[in-house]
Amino acid sequence: MTQPAPLMDLSAEQKDRLDKQMEFLREVDKLKGVLRASRLLDNSRFENSAEHSWHIMLYAAVLGEHAGPDVDLSRVLRMLLIHDIVEIDAGDAPIHGNVDHAAMALKEAAAADRLFNLLPADQARDFRALWDEFEAAESPDAQFAKAIDRTQPPIGNLYSGGGSWNTYHVTMDQLDTRVGTPINRGAPVLWAWLRPLLAGYFAKR
Amino acid sequence: MTQPAPLMDLSAEQKDRLDKQMEFLREVDKLKGVLRASRLLDNSRFENSAEHSWHIMLYAAVLGEHAGPDVDLSRVLRMLLIHDIVEIDAGDAPIHGNVDHAAMALKEAAAADRLFNLLPADQARDFRALWDEFEAAESPDAQFAKAIDRTQPPIGNLYSGGGSWNTYHVTMDQLDTRVGTPINRGAPVLWAWLRPLLAGYFAKR
Picture 1 (cartoon, rainbow over the protein chains, first blue to last red):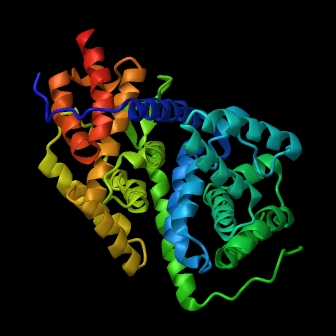
Picture 2 (picture 1 turned 90 degrees about the vertical axis):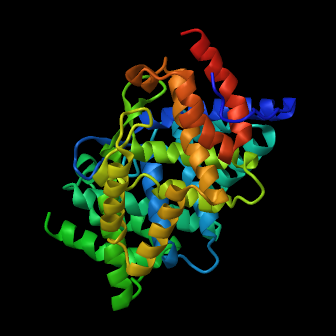
């Protein structure tokens, strides 16, 4: 067998870290099997949480110019990269579904304990802190990340004939509260663009 | 209808930029329908290029410590975020398939022209430059991004019973060339971890 170049030597510590990192990266493959209430824009099937995570990272990269000056876009991208991993154990909680939020928060915290702790301890702490910051939705980075996470699903519903709004009999009032509030907090420009489209759609239903 | 807060006013320029940005973000939804030769680790179905993009971004975030000191991880993440968008028009070219690389490069360049130009002109230029840099695989950031992009599929094949290696009758020699060379160039630590696993698998076939 030819080999492209001599293999470098791994230290025992490097190998141990890589074993843990690769185990985590293997486990998170399951996020591709977690289905959301939203559908692809061509209406062919439900969206899964892994491809949703990719899509909203692209939203953040494209729409980053509409964030406040105190937002660090590279931290936002890392938050969005990991924000849904807990759904591997806890499942997706549809924003318009009848969800027990306290029970869900406990399930998600247990999922974060199990999943992030597959990583080397220092990385587990970093990832957990970033996920906690996203969930708390208090820092500028987390508020922009939340606004982006709330922006993509209604746009998908607009383009695909209603989507999860039909499933859950959603009204414009509910959208103003559940979607408008977090978007307006983290990215008011996006809500100013989006709300007229939503109001137009609901006025015609 | 209640409204969470007064809508801010959008300038005509903001609205025009948002219209273009949202059109791009709508079009790229199609990447969720581009299927790759690789499968999910549970072997349930083929992987699509959107969820693959999410997964390798997580690879990059977790494995970034194994990059050289001249690698800017936030640029790597942005490269990986957009690296496969051209497949919406050009399709996925399986690394072990019988691909006409010159023809594929032309198709991908035409796809990049069409897709990135949905964005406002300044953003279209930035995204295109980043994609060109990834494709050229010369800068330290692009070489690490390429190494990550080459690392995930063989790990998936190892875990799912051979996957696309079976489809394309791949040998260890081919892996050394097509996978080992770019991984070793951008992230030699990863190849030192991965190659013994691959060699062990192929020795038992």
